[in-house]
Image (cartoon, rainbow, N blue to C red; front, side, top):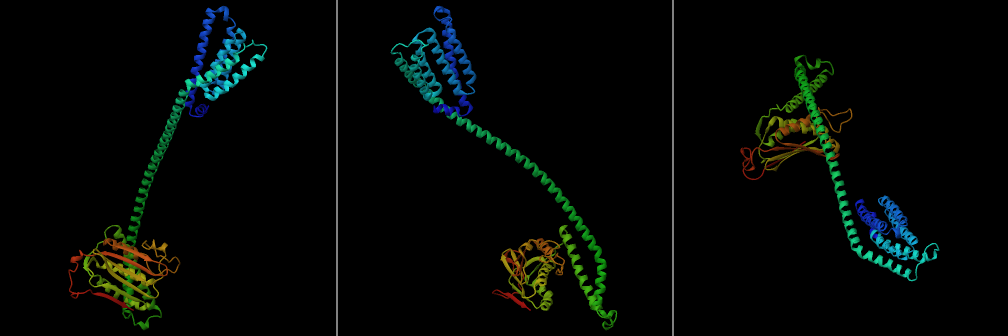
Length: 488
Protein backbone atom coordinates (compact mmCIF):
# COMPACT_ATOMS: atom_id res chain seq x y z
CA UNK A 1 0.00 0.00 0.00
CA UNK A 2 3.04 2.24 -0.33
CA UNK A 3 1.77 3.82 -3.50
CA UNK A 4 -1.61 4.44 -1.83
CA UNK A 5 -0.04 6.21 1.16
CA UNK A 6 2.25 8.26 -1.04
CA UNK A 7 -0.61 9.38 -3.26
CA UNK A 8 -2.94 10.15 -0.34
CA UNK A 9 -0.14 12.14 1.31
CA UNK A 10 0.81 14.04 -1.86
CA UNK A 11 -0.75 17.00 -3.62
CA UNK A 12 -4.50 17.25 -4.11
CA UNK A 13 -4.15 16.51 -7.83
CA UNK A 14 -2.61 13.05 -7.11
CA UNK A 15 -5.36 12.24 -4.59
CA UNK A 16 -7.96 13.32 -7.13
CA UNK A 17 -6.45 10.90 -9.66
CA UNK A 18 -6.73 7.99 -7.21
CA UNK A 19 -10.27 8.94 -6.20
CA UNK A 20 -11.28 9.26 -9.85
CA UNK A 21 -9.96 5.73 -10.60
CA UNK A 22 -11.85 4.26 -7.61
CA UNK A 23 -15.01 6.16 -8.47
CA UNK A 24 -14.94 4.80 -12.02
CA UNK A 25 -14.57 1.24 -10.69
CA UNK A 26 -17.52 1.78 -8.29
CA UNK A 27 -19.67 3.30 -11.04
CA UNK A 28 -18.88 0.36 -13.33
CA UNK A 29 -19.74 -2.18 -10.62
CA UNK A 30 -23.06 -0.54 -9.66
CA UNK A 31 -23.97 -0.12 -13.34
CA UNK A 32 -23.38 -3.84 -14.02
CA UNK A 33 -25.41 -4.79 -10.96
CA UNK A 34 -28.34 -2.50 -11.86
CA UNK A 35 -28.29 -3.91 -15.37
CA UNK A 36 -28.46 -7.42 -13.93
CA UNK A 37 -31.29 -6.35 -11.58
CA UNK A 38 -33.26 -4.89 -14.50
CA UNK A 39 -32.89 -8.02 -16.66
CA UNK A 40 -33.59 -10.38 -13.75
CA UNK A 41 -36.69 -8.45 -12.66
CA UNK A 42 -37.99 -8.21 -16.23
CA UNK A 43 -37.36 -11.71 -17.56
CA UNK A 44 -36.87 -13.92 -14.48
CA UNK A 45 -39.50 -12.59 -12.16
CA UNK A 46 -40.38 -15.97 -10.68
CA UNK A 47 -36.80 -16.60 -9.63
CA UNK A 48 -35.49 -13.21 -8.39
CA UNK A 49 -38.46 -11.03 -7.58
CA UNK A 50 -39.06 -9.66 -4.98
CA UNK A 51 -36.11 -11.07 -2.99
CA UNK A 52 -33.54 -9.38 -5.23
CA UNK A 53 -34.68 -5.97 -3.96
CA UNK A 54 -33.03 -6.67 -0.61
CA UNK A 55 -29.63 -6.99 -2.28
CA UNK A 56 -30.35 -3.97 -4.48
CA UNK A 57 -31.19 -1.78 -1.50
CA UNK A 58 -27.94 -2.81 0.21
CA UNK A 59 -25.99 -2.05 -2.99
CA UNK A 60 -27.62 1.38 -3.46
CA UNK A 61 -27.08 2.42 0.18
CA UNK A 62 -23.47 1.24 0.01
CA UNK A 63 -22.97 3.10 -3.28
CA UNK A 64 -24.40 6.37 -1.96
CA UNK A 65 -22.40 6.22 1.30
CA UNK A 66 -19.21 5.43 -0.57
CA UNK A 67 -19.65 8.24 -3.13
CA UNK A 68 -20.46 10.71 -0.32
CA UNK A 69 -17.45 9.68 1.76
CA UNK A 70 -14.83 9.00 -0.90
CA UNK A 71 -13.74 12.65 -1.18
CA UNK A 72 -13.54 13.04 2.59
CA UNK A 73 -11.97 9.82 3.93
CA UNK A 74 -10.77 7.57 1.14
CA UNK A 75 -9.91 4.45 3.16
CA UNK A 76 -13.18 4.61 5.11
CA UNK A 77 -15.09 4.83 1.81
CA UNK A 78 -13.25 1.75 0.51
CA UNK A 79 -14.03 -0.12 3.72
CA UNK A 80 -17.75 0.71 3.39
CA UNK A 81 -17.79 -0.25 -0.28
CA UNK A 82 -16.12 -3.63 0.17
CA UNK A 83 -18.16 -4.36 3.32
CA UNK A 84 -21.36 -3.46 1.44
CA UNK A 85 -20.45 -5.80 -1.44
CA UNK A 86 -19.70 -8.59 1.02
CA UNK A 87 -23.04 -8.00 2.80
CA UNK A 88 -25.01 -7.94 -0.48
CA UNK A 89 -23.43 -11.22 -1.68
CA UNK A 90 -23.96 -12.90 1.69
CA UNK A 91 -27.62 -11.69 1.68
CA UNK A 92 -28.10 -13.19 -1.79
CA UNK A 93 -26.64 -16.49 -0.58
CA UNK A 94 -29.04 -16.44 2.39
CA UNK A 95 -32.14 -15.52 0.33
CA UNK A 96 -31.62 -17.72 -2.70
CA UNK A 97 -29.96 -20.70 -0.95
CA UNK A 98 -27.43 -21.03 -3.77
CA UNK A 99 -23.76 -21.60 -2.68
CA UNK A 100 -22.55 -20.60 -6.16
CA UNK A 101 -23.36 -16.99 -5.26
CA UNK A 102 -20.42 -17.03 -2.83
CA UNK A 103 -18.01 -17.19 -5.79
CA UNK A 104 -18.92 -13.53 -6.44
CA UNK A 105 -16.76 -12.79 -3.38
CA UNK A 106 -13.72 -13.29 -5.67
CA UNK A 107 -14.49 -9.85 -7.11
CA UNK A 108 -13.57 -8.21 -3.77
CA UNK A 109 -9.80 -9.05 -3.90
CA UNK A 110 -9.68 -7.80 -7.49
CA UNK A 111 -11.27 -4.46 -6.55
CA UNK A 112 -9.12 -4.21 -3.40
CA UNK A 113 -5.97 -4.70 -5.48
CA UNK A 114 -6.99 -1.97 -7.95
CA UNK A 115 -8.14 0.55 -5.35
CA UNK A 116 -5.80 -0.19 -2.41
CA UNK A 117 -2.90 -2.18 -3.79
CA UNK A 118 -1.48 -5.58 -2.87
CA UNK A 119 -1.55 -4.81 0.84
CA UNK A 120 -5.26 -4.05 0.73
CA UNK A 121 -5.90 -7.24 -1.26
CA UNK A 122 -4.09 -9.37 1.33
CA UNK A 123 -6.21 -7.88 4.14
CA UNK A 124 -9.39 -8.59 2.18
CA UNK A 125 -8.22 -12.16 1.38
CA UNK A 126 -7.56 -12.83 5.06
CA UNK A 127 -11.00 -11.51 5.99
CA UNK A 128 -12.72 -13.63 3.32
CA UNK A 129 -10.91 -16.83 4.36
CA UNK A 130 -11.99 -16.30 7.97
CA UNK A 131 -15.56 -15.60 6.81
CA UNK A 132 -15.75 -18.75 4.64
CA UNK A 133 -14.44 -20.89 7.46
CA UNK A 134 -16.94 -19.29 9.88
CA UNK A 135 -20.10 -19.46 7.71
CA UNK A 136 -20.70 -23.23 8.24
CA UNK A 137 -20.82 -22.58 11.96
CA UNK A 138 -23.72 -20.11 11.58
CA UNK A 139 -26.97 -22.13 11.79
CA UNK A 140 -29.15 -19.43 10.18
CA UNK A 141 -27.18 -19.64 6.89
CA UNK A 142 -27.57 -22.43 4.34
CA UNK A 143 -24.92 -25.15 4.49
CA UNK A 144 -21.93 -24.99 2.14
CA UNK A 145 -21.31 -28.19 0.17
CA UNK A 146 -18.11 -30.09 0.82
CA UNK A 147 -15.20 -28.83 -1.26
CA UNK A 148 -16.66 -25.33 -1.67
CA UNK A 149 -14.51 -23.69 1.02
CA UNK A 150 -11.31 -24.79 -0.71
CA UNK A 151 -12.62 -23.68 -4.10
CA UNK A 152 -13.66 -20.33 -2.69
CA UNK A 153 -10.27 -19.77 -1.04
CA UNK A 154 -8.58 -20.65 -4.33
CA UNK A 155 -10.83 -18.16 -6.15
CA UNK A 156 -9.86 -15.45 -3.65
CA UNK A 157 -6.16 -16.09 -4.23
CA UNK A 158 -6.72 -16.25 -7.97
CA UNK A 159 -8.66 -12.96 -7.84
CA UNK A 160 -5.83 -11.26 -5.97
CA UNK A 161 -3.22 -12.55 -8.42
CA UNK A 162 -5.41 -11.63 -11.37
CA UNK A 163 -6.05 -8.16 -9.96
CA UNK A 164 -2.35 -7.63 -9.34
CA UNK A 165 -1.53 -8.82 -12.85
CA UNK A 166 -3.91 -6.43 -14.57
CA UNK A 167 -3.24 -3.48 -12.29
CA UNK A 168 0.47 -3.64 -11.35
CA UNK A 169 1.68 -1.83 -14.47
CA UNK A 170 -1.21 0.58 -14.23
CA UNK A 171 -0.51 1.28 -10.56
CA UNK A 172 3.22 1.74 -11.26
CA UNK A 173 2.41 4.13 -14.08
CA UNK A 174 -0.02 6.02 -11.87
CA UNK A 175 2.54 6.19 -9.06
CA UNK A 176 5.29 7.41 -11.38
CA UNK A 177 3.07 9.92 -13.11
CA UNK A 178 1.82 11.04 -9.71
CA UNK A 179 5.41 11.57 -8.56
CA UNK A 180 6.33 13.59 -11.63
CA UNK A 181 3.10 15.51 -11.41
CA UNK A 182 3.84 16.25 -7.77
CA UNK A 183 7.36 17.44 -8.64
CA UNK A 184 5.97 19.61 -11.44
CA UNK A 185 3.39 21.11 -9.11
CA UNK A 186 6.08 21.67 -6.48
CA UNK A 187 8.28 23.53 -8.96
CA UNK A 188 5.26 25.46 -10.20
CA UNK A 189 4.52 26.55 -6.65
CA UNK A 190 8.17 27.49 -6.15
CA UNK A 191 8.04 29.48 -9.38
CA UNK A 192 4.89 31.23 -8.24
CA UNK A 193 6.47 31.94 -4.87
CA UNK A 194 9.61 33.32 -6.51
CA UNK A 195 7.46 35.37 -8.84
CA UNK A 196 5.56 36.74 -5.85
CA UNK A 197 8.86 37.52 -4.11
CA UNK A 198 10.18 39.25 -7.23
CA UNK A 199 6.94 41.20 -7.52
CA UNK A 200 7.25 42.18 -3.85
CA UNK A 201 10.88 43.19 -4.36
CA UNK A 202 9.96 45.24 -7.44
CA UNK A 203 7.22 46.93 -5.46
CA UNK A 204 9.64 47.68 -2.63
CA UNK A 205 12.20 48.92 -5.15
CA UNK A 206 9.58 51.16 -6.70
CA UNK A 207 8.75 52.54 -3.26
CA UNK A 208 12.45 52.96 -2.51
CA UNK A 209 12.95 54.79 -5.81
CA UNK A 210 10.05 57.06 -4.98
CA UNK A 211 11.43 57.73 -1.50
CA UNK A 212 14.88 58.30 -3.01
CA UNK A 213 13.43 60.83 -5.45
CA UNK A 214 11.66 62.55 -2.58
CA UNK A 215 14.86 62.59 -0.53
CA UNK A 216 16.83 63.91 -3.51
CA UNK A 217 14.24 66.61 -3.99
CA UNK A 218 14.40 67.52 -0.31
CA UNK A 219 18.20 67.39 -0.43
CA UNK A 220 18.21 69.69 -3.45
CA UNK A 221 15.93 72.11 -1.66
CA UNK A 222 18.12 71.94 1.45
CA UNK A 223 21.22 72.49 -0.68
CA UNK A 224 19.64 75.50 -2.36
CA UNK A 225 18.60 76.86 1.03
CA UNK A 226 22.11 76.29 2.37
CA UNK A 227 23.64 78.01 -0.64
CA UNK A 228 21.29 80.94 -0.24
CA UNK A 229 22.11 81.13 3.48
CA UNK A 230 25.83 80.94 2.68
CA UNK A 231 25.49 83.67 0.06
CA UNK A 232 23.57 85.82 2.56
CA UNK A 233 26.25 85.17 5.15
CA UNK A 234 29.03 86.03 2.72
CA UNK A 235 27.25 89.19 1.58
CA UNK A 236 26.70 90.20 5.19
CA UNK A 237 30.31 89.44 6.12
CA UNK A 238 31.64 91.38 3.14
CA UNK A 239 29.32 94.30 3.82
CA UNK A 240 30.31 94.42 7.48
CA UNK A 241 33.97 94.00 6.56
CA UNK A 242 33.80 96.91 4.11
CA UNK A 243 32.08 99.05 6.71
CA UNK A 244 34.70 98.12 9.32
CA UNK A 245 37.69 98.90 7.13
CA UNK A 246 37.12 102.68 7.07
CA UNK A 247 37.12 103.28 10.84
CA UNK A 248 39.78 100.60 11.24
CA UNK A 249 42.09 102.39 8.81
CA UNK A 250 41.74 105.52 10.92
CA UNK A 251 42.66 103.55 14.04
CA UNK A 252 45.61 101.91 12.31
CA UNK A 253 46.79 105.20 10.84
CA UNK A 254 46.80 107.08 14.11
CA UNK A 255 48.14 104.18 16.17
CA UNK A 256 50.89 103.58 13.58
CA UNK A 257 51.91 107.23 13.84
CA UNK A 258 51.89 107.06 17.63
CA UNK A 259 53.93 103.84 17.70
CA UNK A 260 56.53 104.68 15.06
CA UNK A 261 56.69 108.47 15.54
CA UNK A 262 55.61 109.20 19.10
CA UNK A 263 57.49 112.52 19.08
CA UNK A 264 54.82 113.86 16.71
CA UNK A 265 52.64 114.46 19.74
CA UNK A 266 55.26 114.96 22.44
CA UNK A 267 58.45 113.49 23.72
CA UNK A 268 58.03 109.85 24.74
CA UNK A 269 59.33 110.65 28.22
CA UNK A 270 56.39 112.98 28.72
CA UNK A 271 53.81 110.27 27.98
CA UNK A 272 52.01 108.73 30.97
CA UNK A 273 53.47 105.45 32.17
CA UNK A 274 52.11 102.47 30.17
CA UNK A 275 50.40 104.57 27.47
CA UNK A 276 52.91 103.72 24.78
CA UNK A 277 52.54 99.99 25.49
CA UNK A 278 48.75 100.31 25.29
CA UNK A 279 48.95 102.17 21.98
CA UNK A 280 51.30 99.52 20.64
CA UNK A 281 48.80 96.81 21.65
CA UNK A 282 46.03 98.78 19.92
CA UNK A 283 48.16 98.96 16.78
CA UNK A 284 48.97 95.23 16.81
CA UNK A 285 45.35 94.24 17.47
CA UNK A 286 44.16 96.55 14.70
CA UNK A 287 46.61 94.97 12.27
CA UNK A 288 45.34 91.52 13.28
CA UNK A 289 41.74 92.63 12.83
CA UNK A 290 42.56 94.10 9.42
CA UNK A 291 44.12 90.79 8.39
CA UNK A 292 40.98 88.95 9.49
CA UNK A 293 38.77 91.33 7.50
CA UNK A 294 40.97 90.91 4.43
CA UNK A 295 40.74 87.12 4.79
CA UNK A 296 36.94 87.30 4.97
CA UNK A 297 36.84 89.49 1.87
CA UNK A 298 39.18 87.13 0.04
CA UNK A 299 37.03 84.12 0.93
CA UNK A 300 33.96 85.94 -0.30
CA UNK A 301 35.71 86.62 -3.60
CA UNK A 302 36.77 82.99 -3.89
CA UNK A 303 33.24 81.74 -3.21
CA UNK A 304 31.88 84.23 -5.73
CA UNK A 305 34.61 83.14 -8.18
CA UNK A 306 35.81 86.72 -8.47
CA UNK A 307 39.25 86.28 -6.94
CA UNK A 308 41.85 87.58 -9.41
CA UNK A 309 45.05 85.55 -9.79
CA UNK A 310 48.07 87.38 -11.24
CA UNK A 311 50.49 84.66 -12.28
CA UNK A 312 54.20 85.10 -12.92
CA UNK A 313 57.23 82.89 -13.44
CA UNK A 314 59.20 82.50 -10.25
CA UNK A 315 61.74 80.17 -8.69
CA UNK A 316 60.63 78.38 -5.50
CA UNK A 317 63.82 79.46 -3.69
CA UNK A 318 62.89 83.12 -4.14
CA UNK A 319 59.56 82.58 -2.34
CA UNK A 320 61.31 80.69 0.45
CA UNK A 321 63.87 83.46 0.92
CA UNK A 322 61.06 85.99 1.24
CA UNK A 323 59.41 83.82 3.91
CA UNK A 324 62.72 83.50 5.76
CA UNK A 325 63.10 87.28 5.93
CA UNK A 326 59.52 87.75 7.14
CA UNK A 327 59.70 85.22 10.00
CA UNK A 328 63.37 85.49 10.94
CA UNK A 329 62.73 87.87 13.83
CA UNK A 330 60.02 85.61 15.32
CA UNK A 331 62.23 82.54 14.89
CA UNK A 332 65.05 84.27 16.72
CA UNK A 333 62.74 85.52 19.49
CA UNK A 334 61.37 82.03 20.25
CA UNK A 335 64.80 80.40 20.06
CA UNK A 336 63.82 78.03 17.25
CA UNK A 337 65.62 76.91 14.08
CA UNK A 338 64.37 77.41 10.51
CA UNK A 339 65.83 74.97 7.97
CA UNK A 340 65.25 75.42 4.23
CA UNK A 341 66.13 72.49 1.95
CA UNK A 342 65.62 73.46 -1.70
CA UNK A 343 67.19 72.32 -4.96
CA UNK A 344 68.30 75.40 -6.90
CA UNK A 345 67.76 73.54 -10.18
CA UNK A 346 64.03 73.17 -9.58
CA UNK A 347 61.87 74.44 -12.46
CA UNK A 348 59.94 77.66 -12.45
CA UNK A 349 56.42 77.72 -11.09
CA UNK A 350 53.71 79.87 -12.65
CA UNK A 351 51.82 81.30 -9.67
CA UNK A 352 50.47 84.43 -8.06
CA UNK A 353 53.53 85.41 -6.07
CA UNK A 354 51.60 87.34 -3.42
CA UNK A 355 49.01 84.61 -2.80
CA UNK A 356 51.49 81.73 -2.59
CA UNK A 357 53.73 83.80 -0.32
CA UNK A 358 50.64 84.40 1.84
CA UNK A 359 49.98 80.64 1.91
CA UNK A 360 53.54 79.81 2.96
CA UNK A 361 53.52 82.58 5.54
CA UNK A 362 50.22 81.31 7.00
CA UNK A 363 51.60 77.78 7.34
CA UNK A 364 54.96 78.82 8.80
CA UNK A 365 53.27 81.29 11.19
CA UNK A 366 50.93 78.51 12.28
CA UNK A 367 53.94 76.29 13.02
CA UNK A 368 55.62 79.12 14.92
CA UNK A 369 52.51 79.64 17.02
CA UNK A 370 52.41 76.05 18.29
CA UNK A 371 56.10 75.06 18.29
CA UNK A 372 57.73 75.78 21.64
CA UNK A 373 61.13 74.23 20.91
CA UNK A 374 62.99 72.48 18.12
CA UNK A 375 62.80 73.57 14.50
CA UNK A 376 60.67 74.26 11.45
CA UNK A 377 61.89 72.71 8.21
CA UNK A 378 60.79 73.60 4.66
CA UNK A 379 61.65 70.95 2.05
CA UNK A 380 61.01 71.58 -1.63
CA UNK A 381 61.32 68.83 -4.24
CA UNK A 382 60.13 67.81 -7.69
CA UNK A 383 57.73 64.87 -7.20
CA UNK A 384 57.13 64.35 -10.94
CA UNK A 385 57.68 66.24 -14.16
CA UNK A 386 54.52 68.29 -13.63
CA UNK A 387 54.45 69.06 -9.89
CA UNK A 388 56.59 70.57 -7.14
CA UNK A 389 55.97 69.83 -3.47
CA UNK A 390 56.74 72.13 -0.56
CA UNK A 391 56.62 70.36 2.82
CA UNK A 392 56.61 72.43 6.03
CA UNK A 393 57.47 70.24 9.05
CA UNK A 394 57.55 71.39 12.68
CA UNK A 395 58.35 69.79 16.03
CA UNK A 396 55.18 71.03 17.69
CA UNK A 397 52.69 69.03 19.78
CA UNK A 398 51.03 67.46 16.74
CA UNK A 399 47.34 67.06 15.92
CA UNK A 400 44.97 64.24 16.87
CA UNK A 401 43.39 62.11 14.15
CA UNK A 402 39.97 63.50 15.02
CA UNK A 403 41.15 67.11 14.62
CA UNK A 404 42.94 66.36 11.34
CA UNK A 405 39.57 66.09 9.62
CA UNK A 406 38.65 69.62 10.74
CA UNK A 407 41.92 71.43 10.17
CA UNK A 408 40.82 73.07 6.92
CA UNK A 409 37.39 74.11 8.26
CA UNK A 410 36.66 77.82 8.45
CA UNK A 411 36.91 79.57 11.84
CA UNK A 412 38.23 76.48 13.59
CA UNK A 413 41.41 76.04 15.62
CA UNK A 414 42.01 72.38 16.34
CA UNK A 415 43.26 71.20 19.67
CA UNK A 416 42.25 74.49 21.32
CA UNK A 417 38.87 73.87 22.91
CA UNK A 418 39.55 75.84 26.08
CA UNK A 419 39.48 79.61 26.67
CA UNK A 420 43.21 80.07 26.21
CA UNK A 421 43.06 79.92 22.42
CA UNK A 422 46.13 80.83 20.44
CA UNK A 423 45.97 84.13 18.65
CA UNK A 424 44.57 83.64 15.15
CA UNK A 425 41.42 83.94 13.09
CA UNK A 426 40.86 80.31 12.25
CA UNK A 427 40.87 81.25 8.55
CA UNK A 428 44.57 80.83 7.73
CA UNK A 429 44.68 77.21 6.60
CA UNK A 430 41.20 77.30 5.09
CA UNK A 431 41.92 80.27 2.85
CA UNK A 432 45.41 78.95 2.10
CA UNK A 433 43.94 75.71 0.79
CA UNK A 434 41.55 77.73 -1.40
CA UNK A 435 44.47 79.74 -2.84
CA UNK A 436 46.45 76.58 -3.61
CA UNK A 437 43.45 74.97 -5.33
CA UNK A 438 42.95 78.12 -7.42
CA UNK A 439 46.43 77.42 -8.83
CA UNK A 440 45.50 73.81 -9.65
CA UNK A 441 47.48 72.48 -6.69
CA UNK A 442 46.74 70.46 -3.56
CA UNK A 443 47.24 70.98 0.15
CA UNK A 444 47.29 68.18 2.73
CA UNK A 445 48.36 67.62 6.32
CA UNK A 446 50.03 64.75 8.18
CA UNK A 447 50.35 64.72 11.94
CA UNK A 448 50.48 62.61 15.06
CA UNK A 449 50.14 63.69 18.65
CA UNK A 450 53.57 64.29 20.16
CA UNK A 451 55.40 63.93 16.82
CA UNK A 452 54.87 67.28 15.10
CA UNK A 453 53.00 68.21 11.93
CA UNK A 454 53.81 68.23 8.21
CA UNK A 455 51.79 70.29 5.73
CA UNK A 456 52.37 69.50 2.05
CA UNK A 457 51.68 72.01 -0.72
CA UNK A 458 51.75 70.75 -4.31
CA UNK A 459 51.95 73.25 -7.19
CA UNK A 460 52.16 72.71 -10.97
CA UNK A 461 55.39 73.64 -12.76
CA UNK A 462 55.56 76.14 -15.58
CA UNK A 463 56.15 73.83 -18.54
CA UNK A 464 57.42 70.34 -19.50
CA UNK A 465 60.58 69.21 -17.77
CA UNK A 466 62.79 69.31 -20.85
CA UNK A 467 62.27 73.07 -21.27
CA UNK A 468 61.95 74.24 -17.72
CA UNK A 469 65.21 76.11 -17.54
CA UNK A 470 64.06 79.17 -19.44
CA UNK A 471 66.08 81.51 -17.25
CA UNK A 472 69.42 80.21 -15.95
CA UNK A 473 71.41 83.35 -15.21
CA UNK A 474 71.41 82.53 -11.53
CA UNK A 475 72.62 78.91 -12.02
CA UNK A 476 76.17 77.69 -12.50
CA UNK A 477 77.03 75.46 -15.43
CA UNK A 478 77.18 71.70 -14.71
CA UNK A 479 76.29 69.70 -11.63
CA UNK A 480 73.35 69.96 -9.28
CA UNK A 481 73.03 72.85 -6.85
CA UNK A 482 71.10 72.54 -3.64
CA UNK A 483 70.50 75.08 -0.89
CA UNK A 484 70.27 73.78 2.63
CA UNK A 485 70.19 76.61 5.14
CA UNK A 486 69.66 76.63 8.87
CA UNK A 487 68.68 79.88 10.60
CA UNK A 488 68.65 80.08 14.36
